[in-house]
Amino acid sequence: MAKLSVNINKIATLRNSRGGNNPDVLQVAKDVQRFGAAGVTVHPRPDERHIRYSDVRAIKSIITTEFNIEGNCREQKFINLVLETKPHQVTLVPDAEGQLTSDHGWDTIKHQDYLKEMIALFKSAGIRTSIFCDPVDEMVRAAATTGTDRIELYTEAYARIFASGKKEEALAPYKQAAIVAKELGLGLNAGHDLDRENLGYFCHHIPWIDEVSIGHALICDALYLGLENTVQIYKRGAEGVI
Image (cartoon, rainbow, N blue to C red):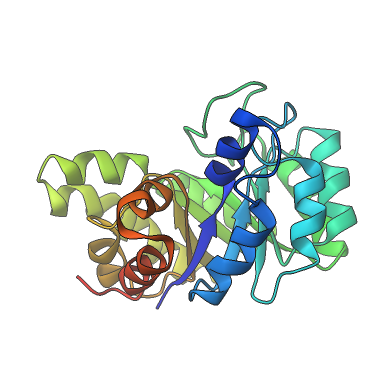
């Protein structure tokens, strides 16, 4: 049964659009945990267009569940922040500088040596590691040799195909990748474009997922349904309720 980690980047985007501290990112981090989320996720970027580095430091001080920091480990500023704040988990994402949103997993074969180096660095600091990975058997197998604790399956393709009505087709490569990960002893996370329509189906059919991190869709739904209610809806989805 997967745990739900709520990505609060979009709250910071809204705050930054007007300056000041409304909405209060720190208060939202407290609230999503109080409403039932099992963790908080942030993805700071070098331009700090949503989550700021100061936010990460402040959030770490109020976490009562789990803290997951996503980002590009090719940025020294990101590496330093993670080592300073020591979250429960760091998720390594192969973003390019200035990228709008994450759109692919690591080539775990091509970047094998680099990933081994970064994962060893973070694990030596006592931080659980996860790497963004496409649902391709070869990439999952190569990920296992980096020393990472988990992979996070990049689920944009699943969400897109699911929305066209082809549920089984959408799920198939992810189910296969998840089986390979399980056989190799890798923990399994998932994220990107998961929403209240497709989440339950995904987690019901891959019940050994450890964690899903969801931000954009959850915050959009909260505008209509309320944040507490929406967290509960997504929590049930993570538990595989269809």
